[in-house]
Image (cartoon, rainbow over all chains, first blue to last red):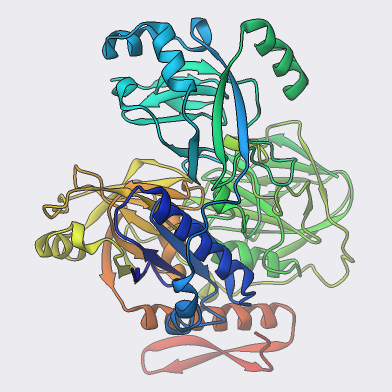
Length: 231
Length: 333
């Protein structure tokens, strides 16, 4: 399938494979993104992949839109490679003050809290891409049985590391921020650290497994990771 | 060293932004008004992308604890040791001097540049503050700044003539856009509404995005939501209520609302400098036209830099009723 190519302003081209949220399409998006990065075009500013589209950002003072299209044309046939990502284990303390909405999720789904933990920590999730906030991973593969609507009124402050559910999605807040997801737990890991290279724990194409831990382990890992006690 | 004595509003260090980390969800950031910021840097003999101070509406009061050359960009009163001095001009400050920058009479963002830039930890390749992710933080009273190393001689007394200063005093302006990339999510009538009506900048606008108010832009049967895709500053997202939100420098890297258009690179600073209440009309241009406009702007900025460096001379030319400035000499751009 050939993608659709459209200008996104005067310094970016959007390459889109439709509206699919699909591991294979996403693998192809990442393979093309890597191929464009590797080609070493001197006009290239950045390539930003998402679910089924990628944005090629260029310096319009060095190349025209048509020039970009001609250069990247042959690379759009690049086949998707599904391997290459790492398996990242994310320890999570579920429930209590770390996941205040886990009871609501259980009630909404007609399950017990233990079921929710079991169902949430069983799959291996795919990191489709990072966006929204630095280090925020769009994960695929959550079990529909625990899908829960967002809060009617978002919280003003969600702690960094909070693990949440919003509709059919699940994810981890990398930074303290406002948020409307149902919080079911919290990881002691730091998902975004600007002093590290790369600054994010997760990268597109990685696979994620949530591993339940208890509060004692959480406190220990937190102190190790952040160099301070949990607030 | 420079000590901040009073910080009345949002004050941050910004440079041309943080490229290369958007795929990790890190916004590009950087100065909201690249045009004014680059001229501020040229006034003190810096490369255009050097780190400088960006203030929102009201400027800071600061004390120089060592000699420096500085310049202010913006329609604002500036005082050095209580003596009024000109903005858009570079001045020499000596140890103990106090600089007071007032409130902008027009526009939203003003700049203070120092010869040699500002020495600041570069995080992910840039000094631009993006406090939400602990990439820098807003400055507060008591903070100190170190200007970068620079030979100060010959950098003071550079003056930008009034007719070359950007004018943000109009409360109506035209912003040029390239239509798309999600045009199929809008009705033809919706696109027509977007291009023919006046939209007003609302107070719910910040470095992340400007929310506009005006007639609703109609979505097609495909609706307002798209599968989340990457976006750039300038992208005009239209949620279900039909009111456009223009992404600015701190915008998230991806978004799930359909985009009717993208503001052209050369005009984004015009929108950035629009106060709440400013009326905005959008005009569609082609990508090729946008590029021509950008090239023209680069040429002007190149000429202004050469003029401030003393490599070119500026002449007033009268053509009919109109007076404008022409440059003569060698241009480097």
